[in-house]
Image 1 (cartoon, helix red, strand yellow):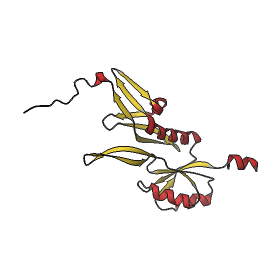
Image 2 (cartoon, one colour):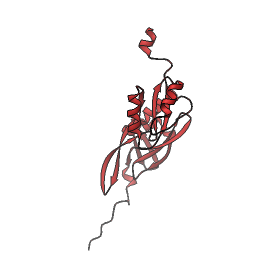
Image 3 (cartoon, rainbow, N blue to C red):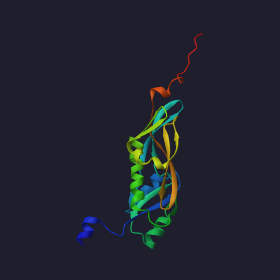
Length: 179
């Protein structure tokens, strides 16, 4: 009994639920109302719309929600019959995958990529996740990362700060013409 009090239920595991994209908030609310522990991380992203830059809040796992529970047949059918839930991914999500998701959230807040001469320098949380980078969009200052979630490989764009060394900007300045 005391180990339960201090460490929680040892049978609780993380599970991923595939949901309708754009309905993350509604599903999260339903799950919390059902008494489940939910992980649905968000991050801030700057987007240009109508010529103006705006900060938008995005879900890291758009189309997915993580829950921590003891999965029973009753709980499975409760989840399966919820609005906007497509299916529950087979098997549990490992604790390592949950930690990876949390580190991606930190990565979106603290990472910098610096281009100097022929070198690329990484700092912040991205330094430990270079092997996950699929693509870098320098103009939008985003990085496409891959990670696993319940056996499925997921790719997500995350914001990073991109810095160019002085030598990389030579010849890139806009030329002004006088009339």
